[in-house]
Length: 489
Ligand SMILES: [Zn+2]
Image (tube, rainbow, N blue to C red; front, side, top):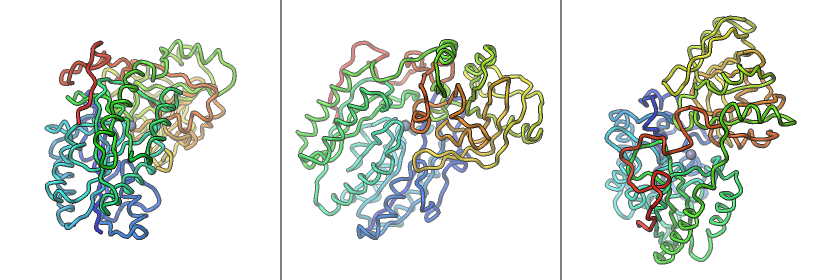
């Protein structure tokens, strides 16, 4: 048995001021066959990582392809996408004959000329491998679950958790189901229900937690092979935007239709009740100051690099400085120039620094302050579940009573190392501001006395009606009140 695996992934915020080029992939994940590390999966590479571990035991030969992944930002350049895609397709062609293909994709990648990158990749892989080969795909729930990609693959499985702590488990399932399909033990059929809604669904909140647990319990019995909940990725102006439910059963299309409809209708009924309450920055600071205990973790989802934002918005920090907040830390602010200046000034230096507020209008104004450099560290990383996410060189500067962590590799707040790398102990701070939508919760939730969510003026507004969509299929909630959800496959 011969199985090929590769990754091509990013999450494209088509409204982002940051273009995505080959350099962004080279900074994140840019690995040729055999170069993938053995000890940890990287961004969207879990299928290859899992397949490598299991090849011998499960009796197949793994042919490794390239793995390319970039941190979320704007649309990828067309020529760069086509070059990476064609490299993988050439590897796939050279690996023939194949029984199976495992693709670690994200699901919300957009390239100039390609609204549905994943659908394009799957369609081209199919043209090479033929109709008998089994294609299995792992996607992020923040994806556009398009008809083309679902129709083109035998197995599609999305992570269930947000924060995405189950990337490896879901990749194991993709491999399990691909192997069982190749061995003719199962005959997967899929149904797709379009919920016609845009929303946010952290699984750390009770309603969504219960929903995920309920659908998980349906799997592995009565012929139900897999249930995936497509949350959607709101910050992309693509036609097939929106939440969808995908059900895979063993040969029973009517049952898949029934179940997808039932689960889809329940998801629709949850509209407006799945996201946390958001405060504005002054309210959040007042609330945090009034609470006993520490740390009060305050999230800034509107400037989440994980959603393609620059992560250099200064609004919350400015309010904190103006209020004279003490005993607080903020991170990460992406500002490679400021980090360079801090390294040049040296540890302990006190000097006037301009930082943040650079990339676009939604970054706010830069902060000009006399800062003290309290921490410097090279080549840092932070952990997120089993994965290590690079931060690049980092500096910590103190402005009044606030420690600000500046980073060079743009990413969101995920692990406590973000602060500890530069000598800040997050558990000892009264207030901890983290730029992240909800992934921060995996590491910062357990240490938090309380978590507050702020809707700042960063580039990822929590009210999707503020986004300048022009190409999204309508009607869709909350842009439209009346919608017509239903089965589309
Ligand atoms: Zn995601």
